[in-house]
Image (cartoon, one colour):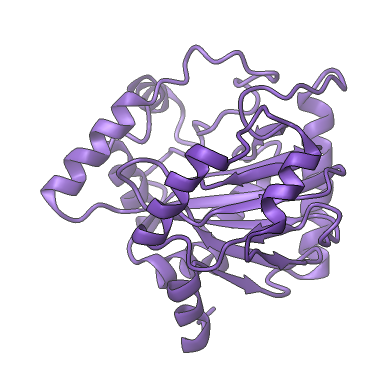
Amino acid sequence: MRLSREQVEHYRNFGYVVLPRLLSDDETGRLTEEVRRAHADAFATDERTDGGGIPGRYLPMMTPERTPLSLSLLEDPRFLGTAGQLVGNVLPTFAESVLFYREAPLHKDAVPGMSGIKLIMYLEHVKADTGALRVLPGSHHADYSAALAEWHRESGVWAGEWDGKRLRRQLAGLPLQVLETRPGDVVAFDWHLWHATLGGIDRHQWTVSYVRDPETPEETERFRRQMAAVDESGLDLPYDPARYPRYATAWLSTGLGDEQHDRTIGRMRELGMVAEEVAEEQERAPSAR
């Protein structure tokens, strides 16, 4: 899939682009079924907690046994290729699905020292009052983002402060663009783009993210330090990570004839994106993918 010059320029200038009908009805239906089946399998109860971030049920969709379609889309040219056209050389992070059941205050998904792109698809028709994504066009640019961060420290509504009236008052005065989408439509946006949602009805989102591959020695060192600082081993997850791992052993397999995949996995290991214990487990596992 080749993006038009207008689509690329829109992304660069405003930090996002909407890709209508990126998935067919058949693919969308099968992905929706896969997501719902995985959530029913992974989460034992219907308990809902706000936690410390955006309230929802987050589940990696990275196993060839339980979520094969999701896993295949991670390296599908429509997603990986689109990310490459918009950002440059990228590496996949992982695919996941989320059941959102609350609103989201204004925030960005940026990781310090890194840049990347997220592609999301809602599995229901979402509108302004039912949880559609709202973005601040151009807020991924450094100066604009810094000004917003300063304003947000003084006036922002933070995750955990779920006062709907206060959130609506805050967002009412901002030039947000509402991105109404139907299943099959995909929104690609910069990690540094500020965004929010209103209308906290249940809605499923499937998403994949890609990080820009560092180029200079300085960027590479900063990237590795960031990866080393991320320790998720002690997280109390509401699902079994052995059944739904972020990186399934089978996906980390190399030497099976897919040279591009081999290069990707090798680079992810080199940068510390894959934990050593996961890599060692992969080396001991049978080379079946």
